[in-house]
Structure formats: structure tokens, C-alpha cells
Amino acid sequence: MGIPIGYFEIHTSDSGAAGKFYSELFSWQLKDDMYDYLTVDTGSDTGISGGIRKLDEQSSTPGTLMYAIVDDVSAVLKKAQSLGGSTAVEPYDIPGVGTMAVLADPEGSRIGLWKQSF
Image 1 (cartoon, helix red, strand yellow):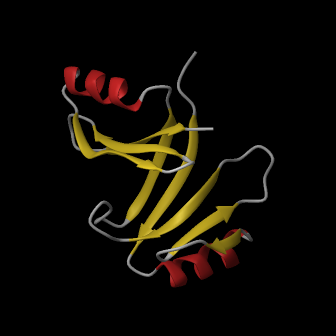
Image 2 (cartoon, rainbow, N blue to C red):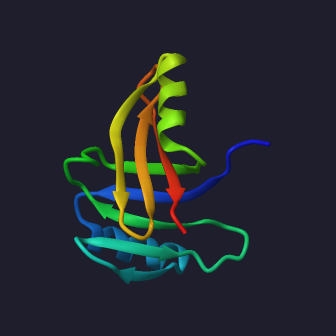
Image 3 (cartoon, one colour):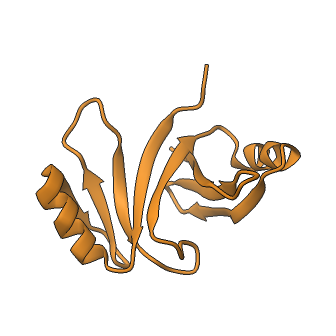
């Protein structure tokens, strides 16, 4: 069985303007969480949820990042490195929520990793 994609983030210099754009374009419901981060409810039972994130030191390039749901973030990063990839963002915990990291494939394309803690 493959690893599912469970979350997306849109990285932007202006999360408010991006939120307005996507909300009007796709009728997404947005919730302002913290630090210029908007959680996205796509309103779909079959789709995935996501967020709109202001660019920062961990996310410095505009674009969209998908997150794979994994059982062990460190093990996946180690395997990626053995296959020629690298760690783009070291694992970090979000207390009571989970652990995130970002890897880069051999060409530099990035994908996030997510391990939920509850």
C-alpha cells in the first residue's frame, strides 16, 4: 500500500490576499489560525484539507507543498537520503498535533512529511 497525501500548503508572500483569491475561486472556507496561517476547508468529503502559509525561513519559495502521511518521519528522511534526496527542513514537533519535515528529491523538488501525534 502506498503512502497517502493528506494535506497541502500554499506558500505565499501575502496569505490574506491568497486566501481571498482561493476562497473566491473555489468557495473554500478559511480560518485564520496564527502567524498569518490560514487553515483551508475545501468543503469536500473526498478531498484533503490544507493551509495557506506566509513565506518564512522554512518556506521561502512561493508555491504549493503536498504532505505525505508517514509513520516515521526520520526513517523516511533517512531512506530519501539513501536514494539521493536530502532533508530540506529538519523534523520539528507541533506540540499535541504532530511532527513535520520536508525532503527534497535528487532534482530538488520538495515534499512534506507529516506524522500525526494523536
